[in-house]
Length: 325
Length: 302
Image (cartoon, rainbow over all chains, first blue to last red; front, side, top):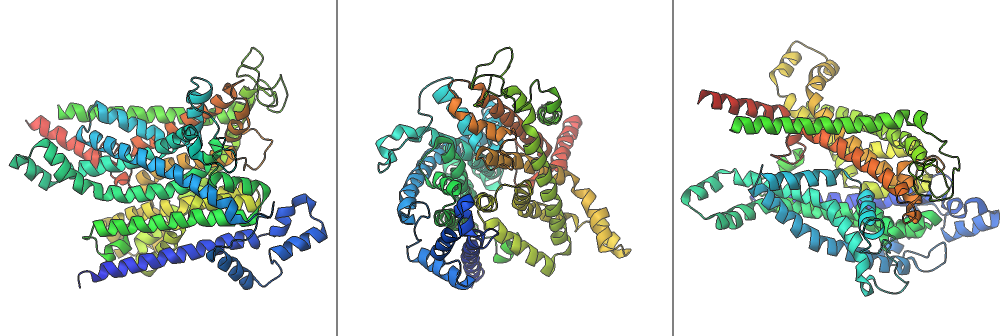
């Protein structure tokens, strides 16, 4: 019976997530198909002749009723056939799929490098709270938290690849049809940028969480009992402090799903973000729709995951409290 | 010792905050009067593309051979103006929604907060890009989108503060003597939210600048011919090896400006050393000050 409110909260949260995804689908569909100067005109721009307009309108089924259009579009995406590019006629999935792999590679490397490092630094800063180490790292985190992603990227390019040193290539040139892994050096700067961008959030959360646990009564008790510093840190403090950090890890990944767009643009990295911007430049509506939906789905799912993790790790919070938070 | 340590830390935070404020103020003032100081018109061609700094162009020239320094002095108007509008509108609407939810509670609260939850679950930056690409970059659209991104987050923070303030005795008293709801909200609750309001303004301004500079960098600014810091960084990237100053100068200004406003905001919260900037903790400025005074008294008694 005690599980009941938690389960019902989880069910409601999942339902809200599904609803949000559906709402995102509707917004993306309406934005690209219905807004002023409809999609056909947007694609053709100044080259619009009546014949071309009619052709594109037929291709996009703009003359069908709205609901029919929405359904055929949504079912196309759900069955894995999101249509063809308006620019060169290739299947949208062929354009987007390799880019998804490249972006996933970027995010995976960032997580592997940045997350453990940020958490370790957070723990160290908390253990030496108020000392030089703490003040130093915290000041750096404060500055990094303020900087826009692309500014961090450009500063790294100025420092490491053009003006000061010449260690890494400034632009990620990948010949079509080859994997980024064949030339791993191009991954260095984008991964470094993304790692620096998400460092402050994880670092601050870990630091605050560890400081809070260090001040708790059971740590005081363990200390009084004579538990050694190492055992105290790893067994009594870390296990309890890392619970909220896990949630922030999921939220940071969700944030990166949006942040990756600008960072890929800075380095010309062939991922989904760069793909989205290229599609926007040439108004390739089906590609724009699919990429926005993919990024939105990742964002919504990771947010959902973060909430569920937080709920599981903190069973003391009842569903009612969650609602009012 | 603890008194000395605490006051030193307090002074240091205050000093860092003052420096942050000064830096932010200088850059904003520079951007406002910059057009008057610019030695050249930002549109005139004064030399070959990507010339290095020289006596006629102190920061060299850009990709079209225009004076980088003059474009830098002109380039802040658009970005700072839009950021200011979006910040003020977002914080104002968010605060009002937050107070209404926190004070009235009940069904109103439930409905508004659930809607804002859904809005927050949207990937905001990606959708902003989508709308800008479909509707075309227009100043009002950029300001509206950034405002819309701010509202749910501000409302959430302000609601939690208003919830606590509305439990205070003086609010009960105001209700008992029959003040109208509107009066209670504007005269009793709002003045007590000044501290968290300042913090939100600082945070949101920093975030607005980052967002709008990013849009300029992507080439999605309203007027592509007008000088703009974000856009300067992007268009001069191809000449980074010839005249790095054309990129480094606007990057430096944006970096200093955002770090300055963030340091100032952080000093306002006064919780950097104790807690990160979590919504609830941000409002505990007075509590921290109280603790310092408290520990000081103990020290004196000893």
